[in-house]
Image: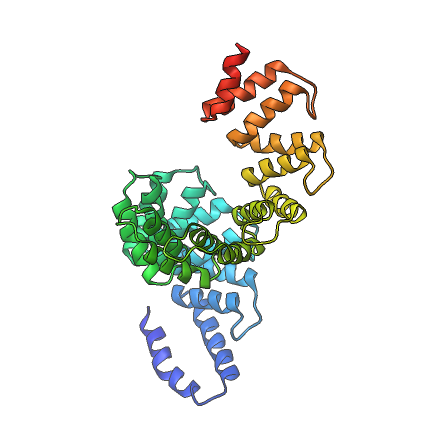
Length: 375
């Protein structure tokens, strides 16, 4: 920062404190504009920020892009990062993930932790760059080492699942613990899972429930769903179908497709709630529309049997096919059966064998027995 900039902040700002906030913002904008137009990179960055948030001037993303770019070209790392964000969101400029990646890279190399985190995300998703889990792991690691909470969560998740690195539950637990302690709801959910499963730590249902509850309070549907499952199984709590239904229902209402599917199962069986095929059909339909393979299989079964809906082999075939394509072995077996018997589709023994084989290869015992009989 130049000496002139420092003098500006020291001599002007104390005076502004005695003036109205609106006038203060206007004066800050005015003098920032003066220094920005004189070519000072820090002032250009600050002016971009004022335009981005609409402080002292109407919000204007196009102007924010303009001034961030001027500062970024001069090497201002924060301007480079913010320019990347605007390209990523398509604010003030046409959305361009490649450009976002370019500017995040410049800022990340200079040590901006949020840029390193975003760079990791782009490598992980293959957004604006070819997907590369190893590089995602690398950049999450750099950001995590600087204390970026979400990077710590993602790094822990990659250790937990062996994505971009060798699976290491102990390392996963270490990083997830750091992020969870700082309030990351996703890390709290992941940490709860590790305690529940005994991954990288001695299994402890009480602590699993503790972390799930913290995440659930923040609205994480997966944590709410997992609490429901713990009530179902009596893990760390007194077994209660009613409490289980309450938590699973809460997650389902917020769009969690696994919870929606499970809720459908509970309505079919009358577990924790009065039995209702119509309600089951409704929840299976909702989850199936989101792409939940298990729900698609269950919805197909409802159509097949005429439960909660008028029987339709054609509709059953349609939904079972969707689930089978997602490698759901129960759906693959059912699809084989439908081709074998001509239910909802023209009978085709060749395709029946094909789907029985897929199911058998995925571990479906009955499918293997049927195949043996067909030989």
